[in-house]
Length: 419
Image 1 (cartoon, rainbow, N blue to C red):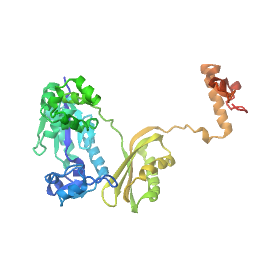
Image 2 (cartoon, rainbow, N blue to C red; image 1 turned 90 degrees about the vertical axis):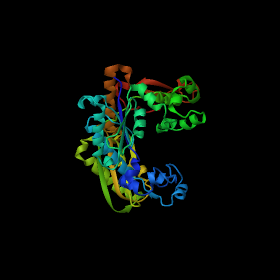
Image 3 (cartoon, one colour; image 1 turned 45 degrees about the horizontal axis):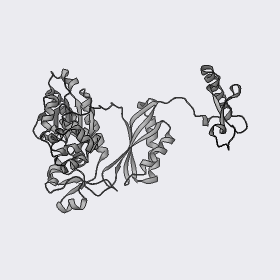
Image 4 (cartoon, rainbow, N blue to C red; image 1 turned 135 degrees about the vertical axis):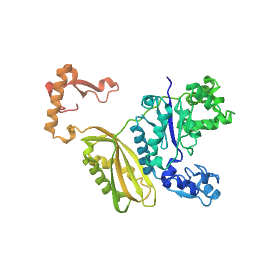
């Protein structure tokens, strides 16, 4: 039995979250403004703005020249993350192992759920529509659903499905051959939805290859010779195939927020950050575990939100080290904040009672090292623990500069001299 991938598309997801709902996109031309301090280009645009010729990535000056009444909305990455996480959680509640592609686009394999829905993939898709519709994201969007044998074809089908028609599902049957036939008439610009193939459509169009059917008809050796691995991947997609889905691991989330008495930025946020770190570490849900990955978020006074993930080099539970590691991303806050948040994205192993050798006295450290040498010799013989002794430091022969020698009778301390 071939795979049946269900793809759910919430078009203009980030723009709808920033606007407060899909209804706001239909009333006036709006577009997402660029990130503060970033490129002066617009993001997603509403249908009314696209009617004036405004497109994502267009320069701000050109967009305003084409549509003087264009309203620019500040991005809301924190709101997007919260709404999208709620939608994914609701999908996981019906048993779907979701593989999110980006905010607003998620795929999952329906084969494992057919037994719960009378063996009909349409019923699985309708259950997914109801699950997403019950979230804040789904209530403000019109979901488009595509079903096909590969994630790429399912995403293309979802893009062609009309979300305005209730219950409409674009179903591509026939396995891989059906997916190949469905994709044959579509343009190669669909390949740009994959980050690794973003630059390929323009190169293919310059060579006269405008449809995925034309791309699938080319020999793999010719594509590999001209475009390398990207050409082979593009042909595989056009031929109805795709790499297997990689469902996300269901993670436990923990978050703390702090309302600031007045707008703050820079060094003024160090004390609120320390309070958030202490609150997160004191939460009962942490259960003594270390933190591996966290995310800083803020609601800016000027409008919009800011979000910055941070991954520690090693799992931490030390508040001082956490504050030091989070000071760098917090310094990149683009504007004064009215609310500061800290959430845990991934936990590490539980905290152990292992202590650093640097925190012990010289006598305790020597005792622990002697015991370690004794145990190593008992397990692996007298040559298990050796020390480096300098012999001829100025020799041109590397082998004569130093030699390995055993520790004298279980004593781990370095003896006086040049050893």
